[in-house]
Image (tube, rainbow, N blue to C red; front, side, top):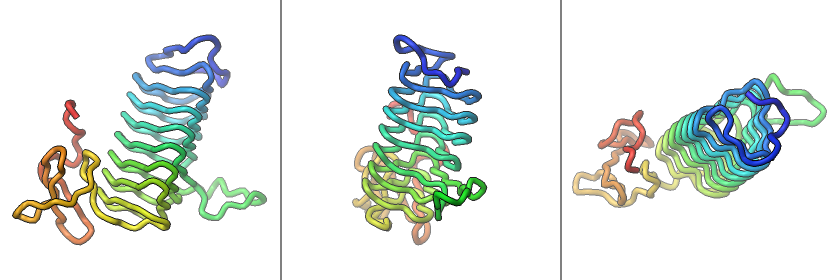
Amino acid sequence: MMSSQNLEGHNKMVEGFFVHPSSYIDEPCQIGPGTKIWHFCHIMPNAKIGERCILGQNVSVASDVIIGNNVKIQNNVSLYTGVILEDDVFCGPSCVFTNVVNPRSQIRRHDLYERTLVRRGASIGANSTIVCGATIGRYAFIGAGAVVRGDVPEYALMLGVPSVRRGWMSRHGHRLTKRNPEGELICPESGWRYQETEAGVLRCLDWDEDAPLPAAC
C-alpha cells in the first residue's frame, strides 16, 4: 500500500496496478492487479478496488466503497461511502452518486449513510444521478442525464427526470425491439434471446445470468 503522498516522477506500476503520479492513494486500501488509476484521483482509506479496473481523470473513491473487477469509471465521478459497484459496471463521465437523502451542512449525518448497489454489468450514463438507497439491477442501462430515485429492474432502460423504464437493453448494450415468431426479444449483435418471464422481469435465455460474457466480447 502507498502513503497519502502522491507518487513523484513518472507513471509507476505499484504492486501490480498502475497509478499516475498526480493521484493520491491513502492507506490502508485494496487495489487489484491490472487496475489503472489515472490523473488527479483520490482513493481514501479502506476502499476496495478489484482487478482490471480503469479510473479516469479526477475520480474520488471514499472510504469503505467497494468496486468489483473490470469496472470502468470515467472522468469526474465521485463514489461516496455506501456505494457498491459489482463486476463489469460502467460509470459514464460526471455521473453522480449520493449517500444521504436529506443533507444539511449544520447537521452531522454520517451514521445515516445509505447503501447504493449497482449490480453486475449495469451502465450508468453521463451526467445521470443515482439517489442513494437504490439498487440498480444487472445489465440495466441508465441513460445520460437521467435521475434514478428507486430500484431499477435487470436489463431495464431508464430515461428521464425522474427516470422511468422505456424499454429493455441486452447484455451487449443494444435496445431490444425486435421479436422472433415466439415473441422473444432478440439482441441485434449477439442474436441472444430475451423473454419477459413476468411483468417487469426480463431474462436472457441463451447465457447464464451470473456468467461473464465470452472472452471474445
